[in-house]
Length: 409
Ligand SMILES: [Zn+2]
Image (cartoon, rainbow, N blue to C red; front, side, top):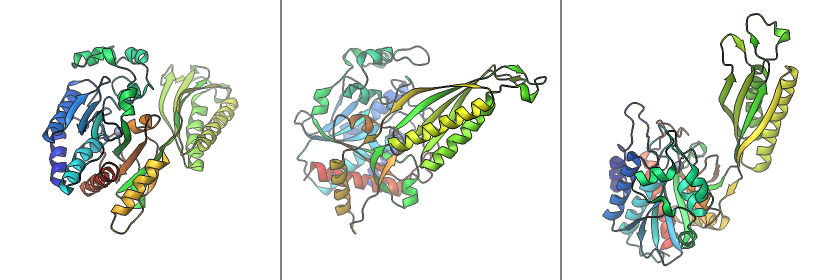
């Protein structure tokens, strides 16, 4: 199992890697994506699995009869964010194949069909919407909206699919496919340091935090930076700066995260007091109440600071995703399986995450769970993203235990 993991990791590593950054540029329906899909097909065929690409561009490798129902599915995605790391996505796919190798070495027999999946366009790097493959399949993205998606060059999603040899005419909800799945388990590198802090190589996901984006428009008065007396100014940069600090403070109080990571300034001149400062807030918390508290606290502080400077403030919520709580039945069953599998019956920690996943999308339709593998730095969506090989192998063993418990007993 260790050798097969290593061989897969080595063969996947060069695909879509930028020499300049050391990061990955595996965007949906590009050449790098096609190479990843070919890699997936070769791994599946080497294991005598039946490979198919569904109408929405997700790849499936089946052991057993796909139409039998109550299938156990595992996998993740192979695409990346711009200059992403090697682990986010691929670790789940490689671990899925390695777990199958491990189960075959154990000599188990399967009483439920098993599938390994590579979801298309999870990161949304090209068309600006994450989890397109799973959203289409589950009906959370309509065919009409999908047809409107365009990349930075104006190429539409169906055009990109067609150019890559995938017929886009059939995209849309696929309830028959979902109805055949009894459980989906996605293994993923942790995008945070909870496991590093708890000292565990593997954890089980409890929930994906509710999160949203808010646009703050601070309208002031443009004027000369050299001749306008300080007392005469309506400088929107000042309340904006105070709001950034308030976001940090409110997040700390609530054990949440809040970030102003994008800003637009008008007129954006070195020697001009701005007329407008527009900042985007990304806020996430473990539960809705904490998130509401953080977001309200930031807005209250922003309004007070804006009023003090004679600056107008408009706040617009641009997007919002409610909490995704993974079903307790599957989560508890996985906890029990892993507890029994470990020599001393240790409990595997259960943790929440602030990042979105295909598993989060699918949890609205089918029983879904996630396993996380320790990330020693917590860094993700960066070439510096990492996981120790021992931890990756612990993840494969845990996934194999889970699949055995679900599909073989
Ligand atoms: Zn991912």
